[in-house]
Length: 146
Image 1 (cartoon, rainbow, N blue to C red):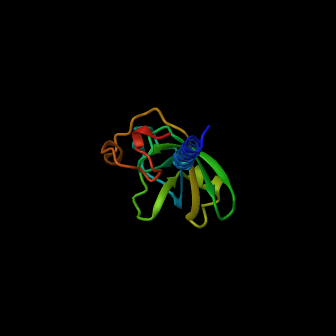
Image 2 (image 1 turned 180 degrees about the vertical axis):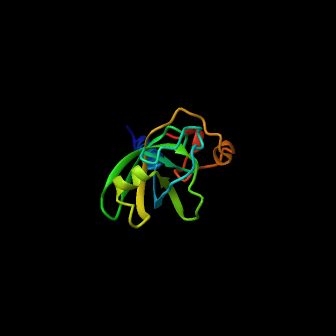
Image 3 (image 1 turned 60 degrees about the vertical axis):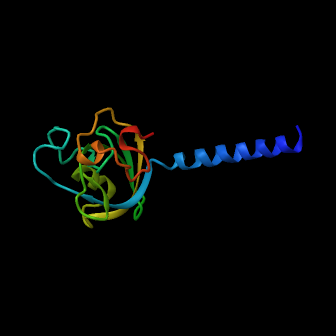
C-alpha cells in the first residue's frame, strides 16, 4: 500500500472510531432524580403502584428499562418507564416510592444520579414531547433510540 493509501486507511479508521464513540454514551444521562407519589393512573394508562419499580421520564418510550445509580451512595436499581415527568426544572427522572427506597432517596427526596437506558420499550409514547420528534436528553430521537 502506498503512502496515500495508508493515509486514507488511517483517516477511515479514525472516522469510524469517532462515529462510534458518541453512540456508546447516547443512552446515558446524569442529573437530579426525585421520587413522587401520584394519583391512580400513569401516563401509559397503568394503575400507579407506589411500591413498584417504575419511573417517569420526559421522552423515553414507555416500557424502557433504565438503570439508575445514586451517585451519593452508589446504590443502583433498574426501573421501567411508565409515566411522564418530571415537571420540575433541573430534574431528569422521577422514581416511584419503591425505586426511591432502593436508591436511598426517601429522606433527602432528591439525589444526583446517572440514568442509563438498558433496553428499549415497545410502547409508543403519546406525550407531546416525544410525538413532536424532538431530540431527547439522551442525544437521540426518542422514537429511534438505541
